[in-house]
Structures are given as C-alpha cells and as structure tokens.
Amino acid sequence: MGLKNDIYKAFEKNLGEDFVNATEDSKNKVDTLAEDLSNAVINFITAQTFRVDKLSMTTDKVKTKPIKPIMGVATVGAPAPHAVNPIPVPVMDVSIFSMGVDANGGEGSNPVNSGKTQSDISEVRLRESDITGR
Image (cartoon, rainbow, N blue to C red):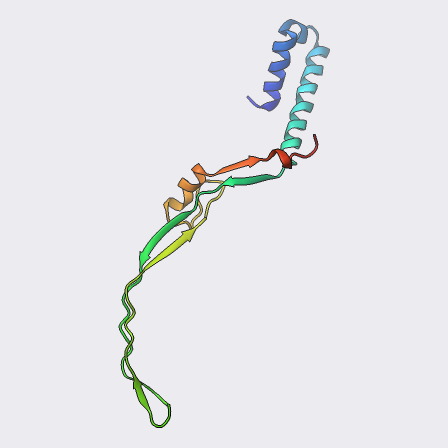
C-alpha cells in the first residue's frame, strides 16, 4: 500500500469498480490520475517548512571530584616572596544539558538513553502560517 494505491482505491470506491475497470483506457486514466495526485501531495508536503513545536531536553547532574589543594606556592610580591594559603575546591553538583535528538530516535552525545526518550515525545508540525503553494 502506498499513497498512489490509496488514491486509486479512493477513485475506485467513489466511481465504482465496474466503471474504473470498464476498459483498459479507463484503468490507465485512473492510474495516471492517482500517480499525478500522489506526486502533487508529495511535492506539496516536501515544499513546506516544518518547525519544532515541542522538543524535550535532557538535564542531568554530576558531582565534581574533590581536588587536592595546591600547597606552598611561592609568589613574588613586595617586599619579599610569600606563600599562598591552599584553597580547597568543594565537591559540587554540575548540571549537564543535552539536546541530542535525531531522526532515528537517538543521538550519541545525549547521556540519557541516547536521546530516544526525547525524540519519542518531541513534536514537529507544519504551521498553518507556513503553508506555501495553496
């Protein structure tokens, strides 16, 4: 089943199978019309601009690792060299944001299930104001 076949079946249903299949010429005419309408629909849809109306983003948190303070760094200053007191670096939560989503449902850089969940719940639509070629 495809678009052309669906259109052909719609004509058969509307006009009647006997009318469509009455002659080889009538079958060819309906087949040609179904092909032309199928191409017109495909051309219309592919000419449109689709926009993302909803895109789910992954957020995750990781903890930084503790860093051992640097001890006894000598600096030059007036009037004589002196040492800087060590500065401890605390463990902190750091947010990770990833929007890796692709046509296959996932994109490798997304840390949560490769983006499959975000792809499945995201939405792309053709907006009424963006329709061209009416």
